[in-house]
Image (cartoon, rainbow, N blue to C red; front, top):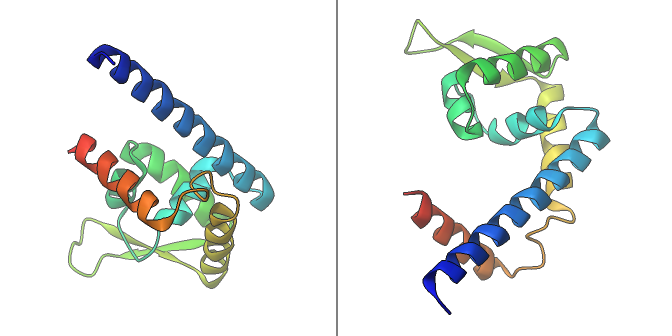
Length: 135
């Protein structure tokens, strides 16, 4: 198979997987009464971080992450506190309700995940290949 054929096939498959994953996140968001961006933010808030760090994890602009954080804060799912070492930054911390909502989101994201049909070693190999391409 020619290199351009492989390239086209890989692009098509990656695009299809991205659409499938996006649809999965949207279904979880609907079930939780959140937006897909809010679900992604909750997924990434595994520990206290800044809005800039969250934006990097979400692969979006800091202003977009701030908008999502504002909505989550209005819902009582997180608080912003002064950062312990950077007086210019705020640290984002989930509330008790936010931690519960995050755990529920993680469970729903894991249930029927499009990657669930792969064995753990296949999931790791896919992750490693994608990381290599992203480097």
